[in-house]
Image (cartoon, rainbow, N blue to C red; front, side, top):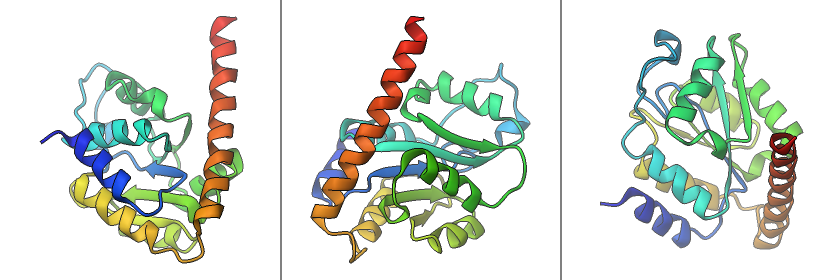
Length: 192
């Protein structure tokens, strides 16, 4: 089975799509704590994670990272080694054990995306519970992000009654504009 194709099928079948998908890292995108490894290690993602990320990118859905890790540099290195770092222009990776709600406040400040327009994947129940209370659609993953989790998330997201198609189109445009501006600023920095 081609994971990206199946993820695209799920996304195309969804009645509503999130403006932003946020991933935790450890035991969500990969099966380890990155602080237990070094930058020289060759990390692996959960088997379906990369295909899902590629499908989200193909659909123009913005992505971000919200993770607690004392080794943000190793996390970024691993994302780069997997050739997916550029998919996450907003990364809130903190070395302290702050609540995930702090990550989401920062993501909201940086992107302007309303909490009810976000889909979040995490392996810890306490994070799911706290972030769900903010209005975010959350999916607990016990074996990493996979197609079943994506399907569950899309179904849960579509169940948000107050997010009508007109609001969604407006929010998606606002998010797309934000990430396009970030990309052009990044391109200008790289040219300098």
